[in-house]
Structure formats: C-alpha cells, structure tokens
Image 1 (tube, helix red, strand yellow):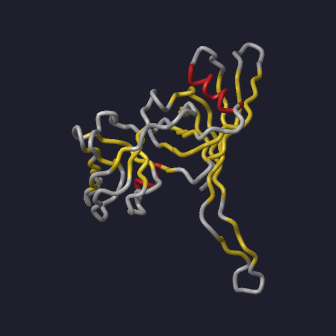
Image 2 (spheres, one colour; image 1 turned 60 degrees about the vertical axis):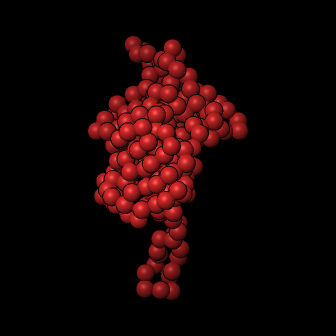
Length: 219
C-alpha cells in the first residue's frame, strides 16, 4: 500500500481501558451485507466500528465493519460481502464513536504502507519475489495543541505509557474512508512558531494489519 497523506483528518483512539464486552453471535445471514443476530444490540449505534471474531468466515473474522442497526437484536455489517451462513459461533465487539473511540483532533496524517518481506532469487528467473503476508503500516501526524480537549490528552497519555496498553485507533479521512486497528502511539513533540499556536507531531505503529475501508468496497 502506498503512502497516503491527508489534511483535516480525524484521529480516534480508545483510552486504554478494557474494551467493551464482546457479544455472542446467535447467527449471521448469507446475504450482502451480512446481518448479525445477537441477544441484545442496544449498546450498538449506527456507524459504530464492529470487530468480528471466531465465526469461521475468513472474509469477516479479524476485520472491522461499520454497524447498521436494524432492530434490538440484528445489526448489518456495512461493506461486507455475501458468504456462508453462520450459526451460534463467534463474537462481535462494537466501539462507540465519542464513547470508547475518542476524537483527538483534525490533523495532517501520513499513512506509510510496508511491503511484505522479499527473498533474493538470483539463481531463478526473477531476481526477487515478495514473501509473506502484508505488514501493518505506520503513521505520522501533526496538529495544533488543545489541552482542554480530552482527545488530545488521551493521545498524550498513549504516547507516554509504558508498557503500552492495548488501544484501537481509527484514522477517519474527510471523504469518510477509514483505517482502523490496534495501534501503539510513539513519542509526541510540541513546538511553537511565531504568530501561531502550539503544534504537535508524533507517530504511531499499527501492531497488526488494520482494516482499510476501500478494500471492503472492492471485496
């Protein structure tokens, strides 16, 4: 995946506490988008990111999908394709925007993809070939300091903690595309320029390959 740079991009980050309780799957339909049945969907809101785990469907498991709440027990996974119906197997875990996922601020974010490892094949027809699974990307970001904003304080806490807590981060682009997955926030520096407010810059590393919304759209 190539480098992506975007201005006025929002960074959302969980606060490092325990993630919401996973809900047991009662059933998943075979239509597109799949509809997940749980005992109670009242804790889920439209557009909440949902992590699907352990259903046995490789196209769903380990990925994040945006919720489309249908009723008190059914939620559709926006962007997911049709597939095999699933019985009572696996769980879903929803993160509420502004509740569990806290908005840091609008920033300039650079997302850097990493190619899979390569192996030297000088004695073969091709000199090198890609080997292994895709690697998780890194990101760098800049923005303006707002110490009154909980999202900014949460970002600073994430940069300072040791050992790093398990956090989920989401990059939300102005065109509504997103990247979401587990992330660690590195050191953040603050600087001042004449005639401007305090600005900050930092970096983050996804600890596993995240979900890219544009890949869902072409699946």
